[in-house]
Length: 322
Image (cartoon, rainbow, N blue to C red; front, side):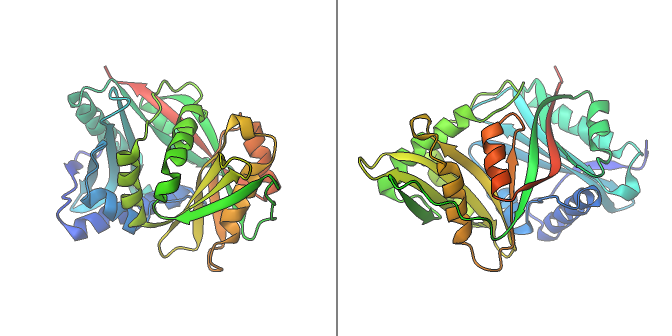
């Protein structure tokens, strides 16, 4: 172990310190993952300087000889899953295998225990061509794999998939219009309940109008938020939605939820909603990222038909700390 390492909390009042934390995180991630999708500096600024009422977050950094060489984020859910802590630990390649990652993990675990958490979980993502050291480190910290998703990327434009003639496509950007909010909340909560989670034992996040509004407001500060939804012409019932984020100032988007309600399935609405969102993007947005569990065969087929290719595997891991 590097005996000179010091683990300290990030001073969130210091803009330069925040910028350094983010820069070290990005360098560490991209060293092993050329296809990595990293939180932008703008999005990090929103999260770090505007505390959420639904999560308590702490950012740690490892300092050696006055230089930040590793970072970690700790997230404690305050509504659902209050026995769980979430973390990500990153160390610059030049300072790995010196015990710095372990020191950060131990600092995270200590704070998680103080917060009455009995489990620490996180994501470990590896490139399909060169897995790197991430999974070995996670295993050394005592974690076990609980779930896997594939990280896929598609270059734009993608093939256009038309919507079933029984439906209209309704789109909006930013805040969901009032007239659609009840239907949108119902679909979002169905998505949270249905999303594959493998062996993870987690309560689904439950959205109400207040929580949705808070999320929308924060997201809009760093992302162009785009939604395409399918509405049945005969009765106005919403059959599904697709949610897409484009970080401000970037040339890519990342695909979040795509859900088709059970009674509306079998009409290729998922592909139609995704392609509707992509077709409306500015010309300077060149690619879209998405994540899909290999067990979700229907969505994997939809993504492949749209031109998505697997570039990384993301493992959700967890360790007991009680």
